[in-house]
Image (tube, rainbow, N blue to C red):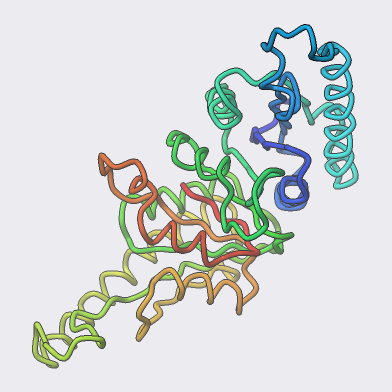
Length: 310
């Protein structure tokens, strides 16, 4: 029987990429999910890349074939370890494909090209093998988030809880795309889903100047709340139709907060939601804004969670 979902996981041998494998292994249903593990391999270690074209009688010969063979052997061992994580989680070995390929245009660009081959989502660890430990999001992960616009990109933190899901919800078209992604890829028995909306103040608490009177602000907030609850109700119906238990769906409007991103990440952390789903924002000509300020701030704040950018 064909698998319902097809996930692509980028593996580079770092502990972060193995965390991504573990997350997918426990988050998705092995009976409904096919997984491809992809590793993009350079021809030579970086230290030797610049030497292979140097012609000098004094330079020692570089055994390119030997180095490549060793790298390929190491890559295969690494990928088998990743595959074992998934088979131990209940996946049949035939449902886990391994792809090891030479680097062509660059690691991120090669993975982006692979993502166009019929996958439902792309998963990457927060930091790669070559990223300093103090970097919040590694270069490869960031390039993939910026370059993959046709699929959800999942950035996995340090072994997040793989059970419950929080959706950052503002009622927009992008927010409903996030809901639809959850409906399509995430139904699981016993899984709780929270629709989390962070209300914005008209009059900024950081500014003494008021745009509207207190009465006008209260009226606007009441109307906004009614509209948001109506939109959340529609989102809840989609989740129930997709198979989620109505008793495990929670809708909440957070008020009195300054930062939407911090409120979303902190709520997920305190309430035990290891997965955050957020929609992309806008269509700015500046690529960095394709993810939106809130989505990016959530990603930076939710260090230990899995963040889906939809």
